[in-house]
Length: 302
Length: 264
Ligand SMILES: Cc1cc2nc3c(=O)[nH]c(=O)nc-3n(C[C@H](O)[C@H](O)[C@H](O)COP(=O)(O)OP(=O)(O)OC[C@H]3O[C@@H](n4cnc5c(N)ncnc54)[C@H](O)[C@@H]3O)c2cc1C
Ligand SMILES: Cc1cc2nc3c(=O)[nH]c(=O)nc-3n(C[C@H](O)[C@H](O)[C@H](O)COP(=O)(O)O)c2cc1C
Ligand code: FES
Image (cartoon, rainbow over all chains, first blue to last red; front, side, top):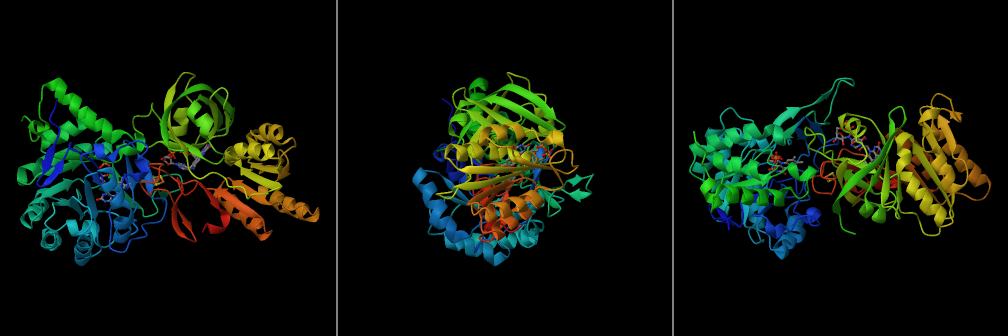
């Protein structure tokens, strides 16, 4: 028996695995494959106050060992989430992390305020989306604005507050420290890396927005490096993600310092990816004589 | 019917003409459950660099043998890799996905219009309509004679020759299929037996033009839309289609849409 539960500074998870926001909706679409109650948590698609239209198609492009997306945080708004997805997740017995987005400092606060009476176990504040013009990544790129958003959110909730960081910065540890000092309970990283793809023959970009966020195995080395650096820089726990597709990938993130992990792009090729990662971590621990997954956290030898 | 991720084994994989191939797979779950217009999201197990599956319509199925057929065209690395799949090769497919063709109740006459490999998702519909006693006319367009690979199947299914057009005039009418659509609509009208329903699948300019003509003639029309898809199950919002009711997901709100709601 391997002890699989972890605690993300107030968010108790039955195992270290959640889904990466935006790749799993709120789980209903994957219900034929995954019992959401078996996951450490479900992280919902980014939600804004009144909903956003998102960007024009084509919104994705496959690239070697990864994909670009420019969905643009399309969502129907927080009331829809409260009326439909959150009750369903509660009924399924899921642990729920709501990914919160905004075009302004105030919008993040308003979304959290709107969710305070809803069945939510933690918030993940997305200050790292590369696919919207206002808010999103811009807010996650300077220490001052990170502090302002996080402080605003902190003031209105006692629930665990996870701050999701962008890798598109010069020094992610500065941003990590800013989020910690403003009251974040945990950090999640990485969001997608800004990239682009071109069709040489037609001389056109593959995405209608031209640029988009890179995810999948291609980003894993960058993500591991950033998780490792942030783990050195802050004392709050880290939710690591970027290219995780199997149990051993997840173990690598935990060794680098992550307390929990998220599975994103891997769901697309394997709808059972999250459950496979849970089982993969368990069997790794069994094979390696690890009795508690918490022993893996930060266990990198170097 | 819920979604399943089932294994599928290649039984045959034949080159037909130019970029066109026909793959037969053993996949009883899909063979039994597929409704005309639905598709499968197929893994590319031999392509490590591909993080996404590929969506394909089902061209034909045999419930008794549990076999399905996919008619495919090589476009890029994924479909190119598929051409090398030998009998016995195992892949996986999520199915059966999406909204099927919805033929209005009491349809007596139907028109099916397929451009290029877009003829694939119309074959099962053709069979279903013929079984229901509907009088079906088929129009097929392609670049050249050799690419009209479905012609014989459609002839078998509906007992009459499809009307064909080729861009180079090597078979049937020279030019685009829209000319044949216009003629068919006029002829049906003149004979006093107008179509009750039309289904169009092919390149978007053809679908747009043909569905416009069909709707102008007062005939209910549906189209099958293609978008790049990541999840294929409705979760990721990659595959949006602009409609008069806002953005819809091609994978689960489609791929079949009423032509009148599509904003081209
Ligand atoms: C519902 C549906 C049914 C389809 N049915 C058939 C069919 O029966 N026969 C057939 O030959 N083709 C069909 N297609 C198109 C087929 O999915 C693409 O040709 C195929 O994905 C191309 O993959 P690739 O790796 O060769 O091309 P690449 O261009 O290298 O693919 C890169 C990415 O773009 C996507 N992509 C490229 N072209 C298309 C396209 N036209 N539509 C959707 N995604 C695309 C790929 O899936 C992949 O994610 C269908 C598409 C959809 C959405
Ligand atoms: C299609 C898609 C949509 C995404 N939507 C969101 C989102 O709404 N909010 C967010 O914080 N991150 C979003 N992300 C980023 C992922 O949550 C994750 O940080 C990133 O994809 C890296 O993980 P992966 O390589 O496992 O996918 C999205 C990623 C993808 C591929
Ligand atoms: S492909 Fe993911 S929502 Fe359609």
